[in-house]
Length: 171
Image (cartoon, rainbow, N blue to C red):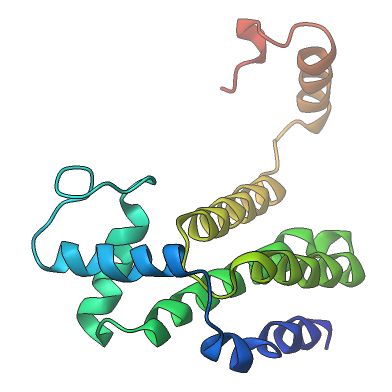
C-alpha cells in the first residue's frame, strides 16, 4: 500500500514533465552525444563530454533499439528515478515501512525537481550505488557466522582497538 504512494508520487508529474521544456544543455547533449556514438564517433576523442562514457553508451544502446527522441531519453530518466526510489525503499525497509516510503518519496521530489526527467549520468550512478548497497546489506543479513561469540568479540576488538591490523582483515 505504501509503495503505491511512492509510485503515485513518481507518476503524478510525468505527464507534465514529458511535455516540459527541460534543461536545454543537459537534454541536448544526452540526445546528441549518444547519436554521435551511433554514427561512429567516440567520446573524449571526437567530442568533449564532461562525464564518463557509461551513460552515453547506455543511451546509445536504447536509441539503437527505440530510436533517438526526447520521449525515449526522458523514459530512461524516469526509469533511473524509479530505480533510485525503489532501491531506497528496499534498502530502508528493515527500518519500517514509513521510513522506507518517506525516503523514497523524498528521493523522487529531490531528483525530479532540478532537472525533470533528464537521463543524466549521476542519476544512473546513484541508482547503481543504491542497488549495490541493497545487494551488500542483503548478503550481510544472510551471512551467519558459525561462532557468533567469536565473531562479535573479533568485531569489537577490530572496531575499538586495532582497526588497521592484520587481525581485523576479513578471512
